[in-house]
Length: 143
Image 1 (cartoon, one colour):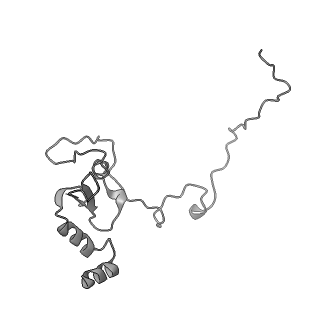
Image 2: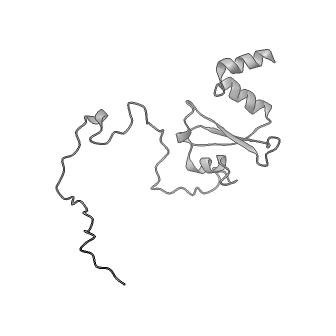
Image 3: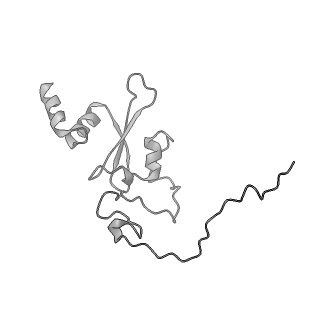
């Protein structure tokens, strides 16, 4: 058991070896795969828990924002129904496919005026009028 502990210490919890070991040793059942290539698994509940264990093995880098909404709902026990190719999808034509979260990368969105976007915002248009609270001495009281 010392060798496995050493490997998991070196490789970490998100290493392919660790994920393969947990998936193989837990008696997991592959539930499905999404359009991104992520694979979804389910295994029996752990001792003391009353719901099955569910997890995703990411295709490529582990990026949770690339999990489609229908699979996210299944992973978080919001539904027990998982998407299949044989069923009609509830997704609409106007919905965009999931995208990775680019925060903290050179591709992150920076609005006009942000220091990383040049630091100069749009000029004021003059259509803003600030609110001034009413003078309490000129207000009438309703009794």
